[in-house]
Length: 324
Image (cartoon, rainbow, N blue to C red; front, side, top):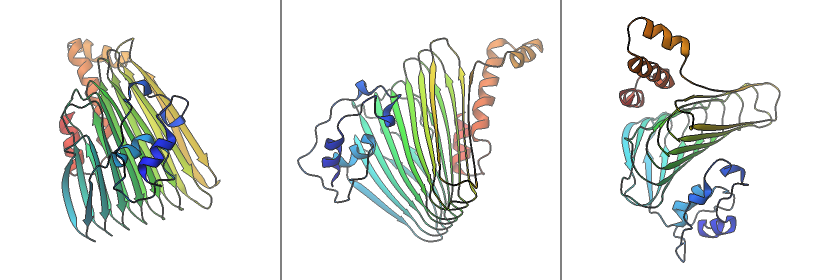
């Protein structure tokens, strides 16, 4: 089934669809589709509107093959409303990919990234773009991982519009590891929404999720994270933690952790904290002569910095910490 047929079959996102529970679906403009789909892939199993949209709009597919054992650094930027990128990363390759915004103002922008990671490869995917006024942006990542591969996904999101980042990660062989770290710094009427599905399809696979939010004004954020550990996946490990600091009375966050575990020899955890800046820490800093405004900034910077400090040294860590 091509992407156009499948997206029409699904229809527009609705709040009763669990993939879109927290998203303001009324803000999505009804798209018009081409008469025929240029991509011949089968999308009959795809259920996410945002994952289908770029392909259904006949976004030109960019395919990049990265050779076994090579080291690559690249920047990806979509030059149109819709983009589709396929990355085939070879065995034991070391790859760093930064994703840049398309800043041309359009009612909706949507990108899809299919990332196929070979055995033993080490991959970092990240973005930390300056704040923008794009009204509605979708980014969908479909990541498949072979044995012993490592993928680190990291992002800082700012802006005045509505963004949704969705990830389907498939840990298909022993030793595969996936790490996701995201930071939302939002104010005004902006909102950011993350939806992750992580599939542990092999034993001794690892996934970690850390999401942090600094929300001011009327900003909203949501995090919908699902971990599926399938049968026979012994020694699988998964952790999910969402931390939010609300800087105003009107900001808000919604979090929905989901664990589906079909094996008993696993370790899976999740946690969620929501609060204000720590009053005791504020008192300590102010009592030592630091102005209140500077003290607030110090605490917010420390909260943000700790999101990415554990990353290994490399382009992603350097870029993200520079932005903080």
